[in-house]
Image (cartoon, one colour):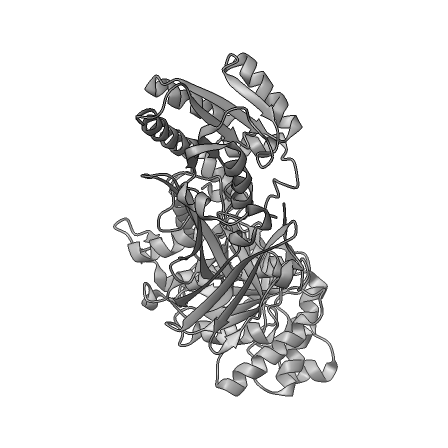
Length: 599
C-alpha cells in the first residue's frame, strides 16, 4: 500500500497558543498531514467567555479558518452542568464557522448518569444537520470502553455524523479485541508516544505486537495521529517510521485490488430472470479463473462417469443452460478434450444480445462444435435429452438468483434419465454481523425500504460475530427431482430455518451476513463461507440482510436468527428476524413488500 494513502497527524502535548503558527511550523516540519488541537486555549476563563457571549481572540487556539482544512478541533473537558454545556455549544458553533474537518469530544467517563448526560449533550450537538462531524475520543483499554461508546451511540440514534477517535492503549495490546472496533465508525487511530521504543540505532519503532495492530488498521482507511511525548521536540521520526511501515505492507493482486473498490459498497442483487445482463457484467464474472477451473474439473468427472455407464451409448449430451457469453461452454469443450470423449455440447441462452457473442465464438473459437439455442431453459423442448446439465445460476446466498426455479424447468424438459446436474447441491448460510457503516448506508435508502432489502457487499468494516450456520439446501441429484411435487406451484422451493449463535464479544448486531457453498460434483466444492472460502475466487461477495433496529449483545449471549424463503405468483422473496437479549428486530420484508425476485 503506497504511503500517500496513509494520513498521519500529530497531537501535541504542550499548550498551543496559535493553531496557524503550529500548522505552518511544527506540523509541517514533522511531516504531518493534520493536527488535533484544542479549540480554546487552556488559559481561557469559561465564566468570562459566557458572560461576554463571544470569544476574545486570546481565548482561542484556533483563531482563523486558514488552517481548518487540516485541523480536528478538540473541545474543552465536559462536566454535567449548564455552564459547561453552554461553553461546549459555543465551541461547536465556532468550529462550524471556521470549517474544521471535525470536532473531537473528550472520553466518556463517570457513572451512568454522567454517561447519559454526555449522550444527551452529544445528541443535541448533532441535531444541527449542517454542523461538523463529531469524533468521540475512546480509550480502547479503558474499562467498559465499548459499552460506554455503544450506549452513547444508541442515544444519538446512530447518527451518520458520529465518528470514533480511538486511542490505543500500549499496556492493553492483545487484550482488546480490535475486530470489535473494526466494525465501528473509527476514523482516527491515536498512537500514544509510549507505544514506540528505540531500536538499536536510536530511532523510534513499534514493537511487533503493536506493529500487527497498526498494520491491521492501515487496511481500514483510517487516519493516524501520533501523540507527542511530554518531553520531546516532536514526533517527526515516528511519522517517518509510520510511512515506512505503510510502504512495507504486501501488495495485492489485480483481482483483490479490483474487489477493494467495492469494499462496503451496497449493491442490489442481480435479477437475471427479469433483466438481461450487460456484456461488462458477464466479463467481470468470466475473469474468475478458480471458479471456472472447478467447473471444468466437475465436468471432467461427470463426463468420465457417464461414459463409464454400461448402458450408455453414443455421444454424451452436455447442455450449458444460461450460457451467457460462453465461459462454461469453453470449459465443457476443454473437459471433453482432456478425456478424448465424444461430447455434443449445447449452449442455451435467453439473452438475445449475449447470443451474438456465442455465435462469434462458435464461428471463431469453437469451430461450429456447439449447438446454440436461443431459449429459456424452463420451456425449451429439445429433440434429445441431456446426460449432463451445467449452469452457473448461483447467487451470493446460493438460491437468490432463482437457480431452483430455473432448474426445475430444465430438469423437467431437458434432462435424460439419471441426468447429472452441475451443481448438484447448494446450501445457504447466515451469521449475525456488526457493521456500523453497512447499517448507515442501508438506512440512507430509507428506514423502511433500505433496511428491509438485502444487498450484495464486499464486507470489510464488519465483524461476523459467530461462525456461519447452514439454513437450507437445494439438491439436484436426480433423486430430489423425482420426489418433488408439481414444480409449477413452486411451494416445494419454500424454506424456513432458525439458528442459534453465541456472540464472540460484546457488540451490536446490525443484521445478517449471508454466504453459500455448492457441491458441483462429488469432491468438487465452491464456497464463499469465511472458513472454507475457495482460494482466490472473487465472483461472489456475501449478502447483507440489515435490520431496522440494531440489537446490543453481551459477550457469550445468545442470538437467534429466523429466515424464510417464500414464493407467491411470479415472485420469490426472503423474510428475516433476529432475537437477542430478550429483544427482537421484528420480521423484515413480510410478504415481499420491499424486495422480491421476479421469475
